[in-house]
Each structure stands twice: as C-alpha cells, then as structure tokens.
Length: 95
Image (cartoon, rainbow, N blue to C red; front, side):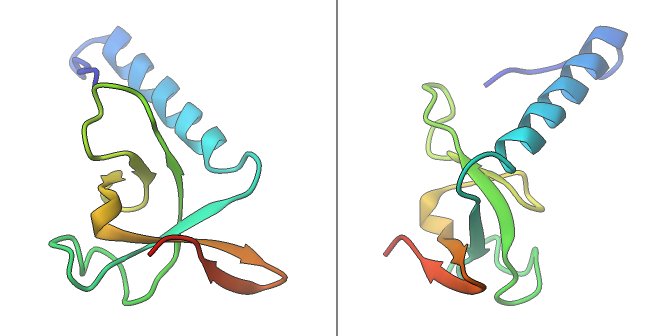
C-alpha cells in the first residue's frame, strides 16, 4: 500500500495516475463484477444487488483487500460475490 500527500502536486499526480491505471484494469480482458454481500459491513454502499466493475490485486502489502473498484474502492473477498457477464447473463464465479 502506498500513501500520497494530496497537498503536493506530485501526490495529486500520483493519485491521478493510480486512478487511470485502476480504470484500465477494470476494462481489460474478461470483465469482473462484484455485488456487496448482505452480510458485509459495507452492504448499503450500493443499491441492493447492484453490480460494479472490479479487478483483483495479488500484490503483497494489500492485505485482505484485494478486490479493487466500486464505491468503497477496495473490498475483501469475504465482502463481495464476483460475477462475469456472458451473453447478457450474470454468472457468479465464487462461492
């Protein structure tokens, strides 16, 4: 995990770069989506059953919050169900 000083031009530029990279990751390859589980403390950040695009970070230092994207920015696998959309149908890919 990296911290940025938003009071500096360098910090703001680094955050903008991170946001661009995050956007690119959510649009490459097979798109992953998530829905926040009803049992999660984050339930309520979206409308019930609302899908949002995500990607997975498998980098040391991120801890359990490897699902990136959505309104909260990052989630644990325990907090979301993952989906793909194929031929217009949602397919859940984790249990």
